[in-house]
Length: 87
Image (cartoon, rainbow, N blue to C red):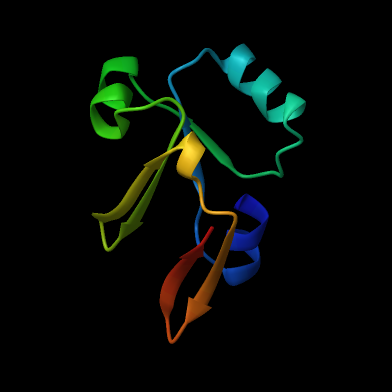
């Protein structure tokens, strides 16, 4: 998803409540592309996501989609300026 969003010009941020070392290892172990990896408080993270890991999609600062790792979309596309999620 990170690579797909980058190709579409959509910002993608990874928020982690783990240590910098754990986040770097996760990124390396999962062969993730370069992107913005930011720190977040564990309690705030769990309050917002309700699962770990999770995907939250925002539009103009409003949550428009939230899912757990098991429900991540496999592909994304843009259609008339709207993000379309595909499983």
